[in-house]
Image 1 (cartoon, helix red, strand yellow):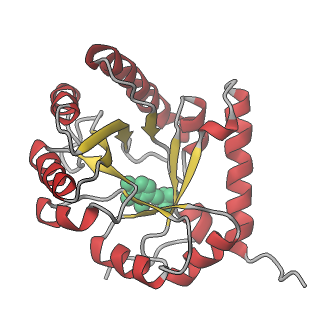
Image 2 (tube, rainbow, N blue to C red):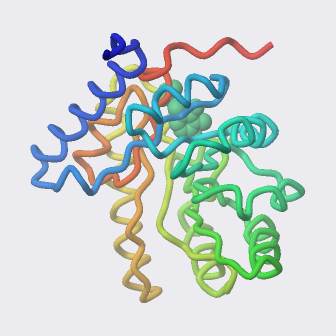
Length: 236
Ligand SMILES: *Cc1c(COP(=O)(O)O)cnc(C)c1O
């Protein structure tokens, strides 16, 4: 007998459909967009439920919470964990082997720490460089010029594979306000890829409020939390 679909699963399917429609509108293959369900602050059982509905990619922002959730879900096969939050260099040692992709590399110091760990583990860590396109002081990410330098350095580190770029535009009520930032990230990716001579396939952009615009502008990874899981509890 089939249990009634729970609400997060229903919302997950709706988000998937909206992503597919946005992709088609833009003349893109819907299969080229991966939905990362941002499960930070939500418990392992919520993740398990979505995993049973076929969701594989999950995003986390806090290391301790993420590792505890991974441990609780060890029996679930095929999960891909994404680290999307601010990462302190001293936490780099927890990343390698635990996360499929780190979206938030924003300094050479962090990149070198991840590289060192990956080399020691004889593996290669997939990373994105997070770009702070608006130059917001309170936000993580490197400025555009620094991003270029950082990307060049990362490409030279054998323990890392630079897969692309990530952006978090300034918060705005109007999702269209994000579009110029998404477009700018794609253009920056195109020029960096050409200059460095490496493919940079991934563009991580778009959240609950603006993932449709992000897909229309070329996102390959969208990071959606609230729309799927509901509101997060306010930080204590
Ligand atoms: C929390 C978070 C998200 C998800 O945000 P929602 O608005 O809940 O979809 C996406 N990206 C990053 C970097 C986050 O920290």
